[in-house]
Length: 24
Image 1 (cartoon, rainbow, N blue to C red):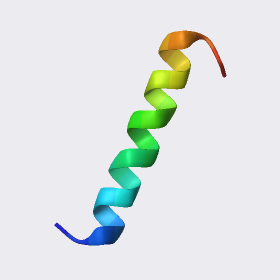
Image 2: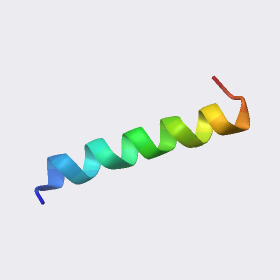
Image 3: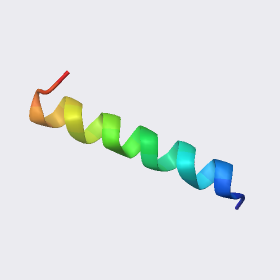
Image 4: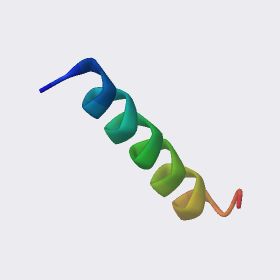
């Protein structure tokens, strides 16, 4: 997995966490 792919995954996971916490 490339560094770019990891960065994209981290960004997506952060967005999902924000949505779950209602911080959209």
